[in-house]
Length: 599
Image (cartoon, rainbow, N blue to C red; front, side, top):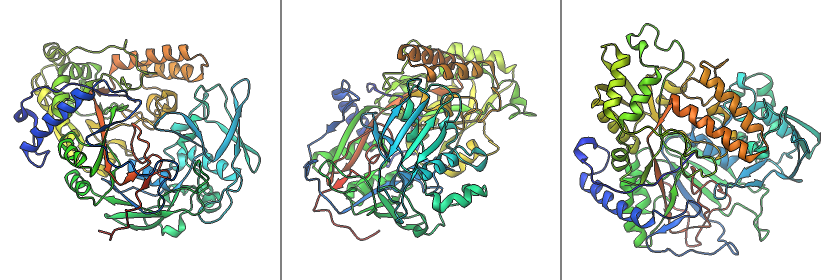
């Protein structure tokens, strides 16, 4: 997805600010500090991180990276399961990246494909067949050999949508799901029905799981129920850099080095560098900030809140914290309505709540400058679709960008309401302060055009169940949507009407609208084309259709700041979450870092 930038400006705190910070004075200080910093770095490239504040001791560089020690990181919500095939929340995904490995890995700092379990591959001249050679001598954490059978099993499980897989949509390539065969134990062949331009990038979507442990569950259609949070750590087996040693619900997960991990660094030393990685569950963002300032955690797994910039800048100036400006982000938070047919049968609002005109009025009614200044303290840029300027290859500047025009928005609302009051609820995640502020801005801006918005904050699990459960029950939602790759062809689950992340009306048997059918057809063409120019033209057309119907509304994409303890070394920041921990096997801590008593 896409980026962000912006400039600070004065705004009326009393109009939008509710109880989102520890105190109002701190919020104003953050406005001033972040504004000054953004003014100084607004020209920085997204390709490299900019250090903010005094440089900390960089520690030992790649030749002679410090080994051992403990890294403590924080998450805000517990994982839903240890089984990434059935849930895609960020905490479950993080745990999967610690425990498992994939055939290839996309380097989140460079966006290049790296060999992983597959050490090399070739493509046939017609682009329909990829032959991958697997690394020899790799074993799971329980000592069982890894072979092509595990790859075939994992992709069969990932494609099993009826069995509960949430990865099936992300495997759509070349007109359907690829076929995987294994001519020998160390060779896998991926065959497509049509050419697929991104090629092996799609393999980054699927972790490889142990066939010897999970085949009975797949055969009995019970894979969705295995590896839940009640699974003893010893029953889990993976190919990743760590193994789960202990899980204390509501408190922490403790991971230790996987001695069987197959990756080595450039000097031939075994990875990971760390002995132990502790993931603490800290739901409250204020508590998370205090823990980072106090040295109780070494990093968070998401970006810094705008209001936290000022205290972290002081800590960076003192050499305690490394504060990085990663530039404009790929992803912007999003608002969408429940567009599932029949969702509002019997509801007097059915005549207008799913109309294109409602969403068009909303996008014209939101002052994006007010939004950026209030929600992100000026460190954000206006956006109008899911692809924003940071994704330079795929951003279509020619896609329509509706003007701010509250008078026209009000007239459009009146034209569809038929004299009825226009009112709906907007679900937001509880405790996400920037999103809560965004909900307040949306509420107050829409009030000016006669629309009443009831902002309802729910905890993460309840929100996901209401919005993405088997029977979605919501009017509208404002939440974070993250693309798994910058190449849109790797995210068919969002764009295709049949997709599991087509959030406004998921998993359609046939396209519900003519414009969704048109996007489906264009998407298939651009994903299959070997002509990069044609791919960009076709995807620009998709963005124009999307902008015309606004199934998902975007307002501002934030600039991304991340922070870690100055003891952390050898980090390669990426723009997508977890920005500092996407390559956990390469992260290190200084030798002075001893394992601390657990809290």
